[in-house]
Image (cartoon, rainbow, N blue to C red; front, side):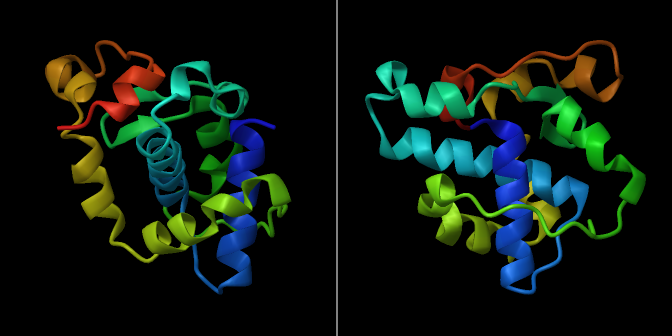
Length: 145
């Protein structure tokens, strides 16, 4: 269980529903899946599920939150769709409708939405100029602009 498994699950859901997914989309969908869980679970601070899931942190990148390890795993595809069937995980089936909804959205609308997040806005200059990156804690993800 973790972010790598979530990424594989998203790819499997995309494949099942004949929806293409780029690396940029994958990153944004992962962010909004985690955020949707946090928004719907007020007790997330003591919830072992989300702490096991969020085992690799998002970082502040110019196009919004990115889990670097997962980005580099698929960056050879560039801006093209990832051709990987992924791996469906029943533990993550609770996210399927959220995944499908976000995969159908314009990716740059998702990028702009993540850039309104306070942590990103607070460090905008440093992020856009590649001076520094910051890790998102769960509190940062739920706090949205």
